[in-house]
Length: 371
Image 1 (tube, rainbow, N blue to C red):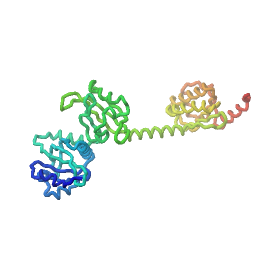
Image 2: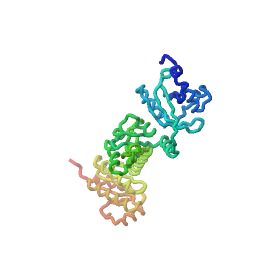
Image 3: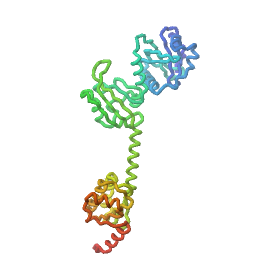
Image 4: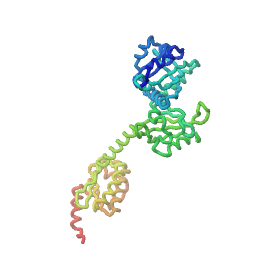
């Protein structure tokens, strides 16, 4: 800890016309201020000035201040310049601030800030656009064509930090190159990418397009990112639930030795038949099924496409050397089967699963025993 108090160490700047104050970021309070600082902050006394509570600062403001404090803490001789808009007593005050690190009486580091009043005219539209960019949740970054970060808003800073290289932001090793390519092609990149962030891997909707660097006039790339992780997780959950529902609507049941029953419930849609195909054909091979009974008692008609898929399944089962039987055909499905024009003479049809199972058992008894 310092041998002298903060007030003693800064006594030489007490009478300066330049506003100087110390901000304790950890506690969100002023730690010291000279007379000029009290004047621009519209404070009647040092006691009142030090009592103000700024701990409820926005995430964007906190991120920016923490970044500045890290920078000046790493090199105690360094300083950082930033343009700030403060709101003493609710009135906007535009300052160019020169910030460095100073040690508080308890040994912690705080920001020593010199405030230079900006006398040049300020375009309200520019001020408002800068303020909006600071507080939006979208991550916005300006890159040069080589991938160097020219500027990033607080949301991007929170996500990726100050020291990470742009090339390492995404799981896809080719993503950075595709983004930077828009500087040459003047195209627009619009992808969803897995991003490596301070919160772990997150999915970002990334849009990149070419623009000009207002400081140099050279080409630059502006990258806009929105976190869509929650949406993708919801979609994955819905897809998993749908898959589970499809499985439950057409389970594979071992009803006798060598006999596999497939009761199909609900609509005979293409999606349901396509999902069933992968499970069924693999199941026939794995279980050595000799008979597969398609029970459509609980199925509802779903047009010619679904029925055509079902008949394809029957043919595929036959190609695997198993006998396919269809049971429980009701009037509506029978009508649609006829309308498809499919050749049904070779497809065994039975009234119920019970009848098909009895026939399969009788057929098994008649089959010669294997030696």
